[in-house]
Length: 68
Image (cartoon, rainbow, N blue to C red; front, side, top):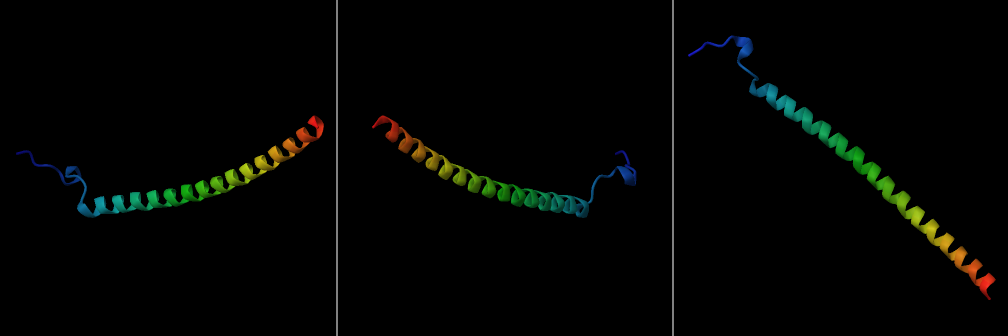
C-alpha cells in the first residue's frame, strides 16, 4: 500500500463540520433576506391592485357620464 503524506490525507471531521455549519448559516441568511423581499413585493402588488381598481372605477364613471 502506498503511504500518503500528511498533507494528502484529506479533510478531518472537524473541518467538514465547520464547512457544513458555515454553509447552513449562509443558507439561512439568504433565505430570510429573500423572504423579506417576497413579503415587500406581495405588499406592493396588493397596493398596485387596489390602485388599478380605483382607476377602473373612475374610468367606469367617466364612461357612464359620456354615454348617458
